[in-house]
Amino acid sequence: MTETLLYEGKAKKVFETGDEGVLLHRYKDDATAFDGKKRGSWVGKGKTNATMSAAVFAYLEERGVPTHFVEQVDETTIKTKRLDMLPVEVIVRNVAAGSLAKRIGYEEGTPLKAPIVELCLKDDALGDPLLNWYHFRELGVPDEDLKLCEELGLKVNGILAPYFDEMGVTLVDFKIEVGRDGSGNLMLADEVSPDTCRFWDKETGEKLDKDRFRRDMGGVEEAYEEMLRRVSGGRSE
Ligand code: UDP
Image (cartoon, rainbow, N blue to C red; front, side, top):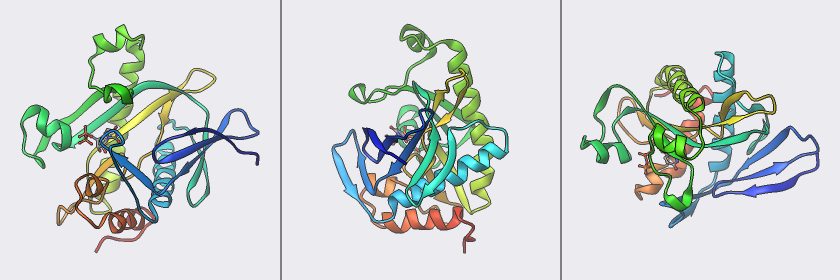
């Protein structure tokens, strides 16, 4: 398969192939945080992110959620449909953490009464700000797309919270992105991984995600390995 680099991001490279409707996403072992100010890298990160995304997208597809996922090509690469991405980051939360804990003055770890959905503008230069529907309308994102983003986020949460719970993991919060295929259908895109979700061990509360890197907690390589093990069918002790 011919591969032409289309885009290189912080944690992945995206390639065009001979097939116009298809892209390859190759996940790197590199990580950044705080708008690229903090950089790091650890062995196995790309493998975990590609393999977990593949497993989760396949699981969601089986339950009626349309996604861009086609197949996993190798340890660090997944093949996807080519989409036009909405400039929206959809965040869904079950437990207060990170920016929400600060925003509403909750102690991190406080369970929410009901899931909270947030829509952020995908714009690194602006720091991905949290916007409301009026702002998005102004920027040309129609209400029906925002409605679908919120519904899709809640549906994905309704499927993935029990999926991870079975593995002994609390799905604290996560970010997804949405894109439109050539026929105009909106679907789930991007990735579902410890880079984009907060995962806490149900028993110990141990963090099994990128916060270990953001907060210099150590053990980040082991945390990603552990999440890969659990998603691949290994039972939690
Ligand atoms: N998130 C993400 N990319 C971003 C911002 C957030 O994947 O650019 C994820 C993050 O990993 C967490 C959730 O979205 O699972 C909520 O993040 P939050 O708003 O609390 O931001 P943070 O504390 O990471 O700044």
